[in-house]
Amino acid sequence: MIKTKEYFRRQYHKRWVRRLLSVFMILFLPFIGFYIHFIEPRLVKVSNLKVPIRRLPTAFARFRIIQISDLHYGPTNNSVSFFKKCIEKINQLKPDLIALTGDFLQWDSRYLKSLAQLLGHLKAKTGVFAVLGNHDYGVCHKGHPPTDPIDHEEVIAEFEKMGIRVLHNARFPIRKGKSILEVIGLGDYWTSYFLPHKAFRNIKKHPGVHYPSLLLCHNPDSIDHLEDFPFDLMLSGHVHGGQISLPWIGPLAVPVKNRHLRRGLHRIGQKWLYANRGLGYIFRGRLLSRPEITCLELVPA
Image (cartoon, rainbow, N blue to C red; front, top):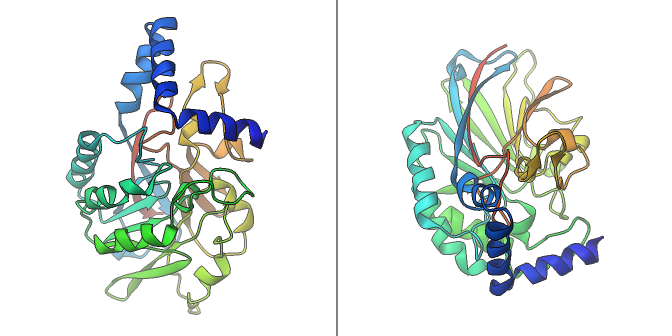
């Protein structure tokens, strides 16, 4: 299975193959193909929802978090105007915090500086926070070494030059008076950098005091290994919501074990998980899975 996926991935690297696929979709499916290829990949939806958090401090009531994920900026998806419009839309929402949940690059690190400069225009009252996805390490398949020439340390360095705080198995406390919101970020689940014990080790527990925690982790499957760690809301991406979903059948491909976690808000025990559908794509095409900007508002449970 991995060999087959890798073969098709390498074929898709070739420009003539991408053009041939585009022509095929347009000619073979003149109306649906046009919509899948040209319309829905640019039809961004802002998803607004309220997330009830137990013992939420008054200082963080109605705290607004904007999440975007899976830009896959690279040879197949490099429209500067599209991403500029998305950034303008995000800034108009006046977020308290912006969360970027990985897979920023696609195949080629030459796009890194221009992407970092674009994302550097994001504005939030308490900051812009990011975690890396598997593609930001050059990893395309679970359990396999990197296949693409992308150095995650370069990604971190370029983002931080632009004021984006990358939480690579780290945490950052946001303070409002005596109240704290912990923001924790993990390395990607498909790599050896998924180290939750390291990320959570400096979080202090205070008797009788609850500090809400926001966890950023690219792959929603990682929730299976996080049962014993203290957080209230986890933000993920990775799956693109299925990207191509057929009516009555569902998504054609879901690269996670927990298929039901491919999109939307889920209650898992006493914790919340939200899986964002992403803004980009590997191959150009979306059906019943529009690109997404998520606006989450924290409210008392």
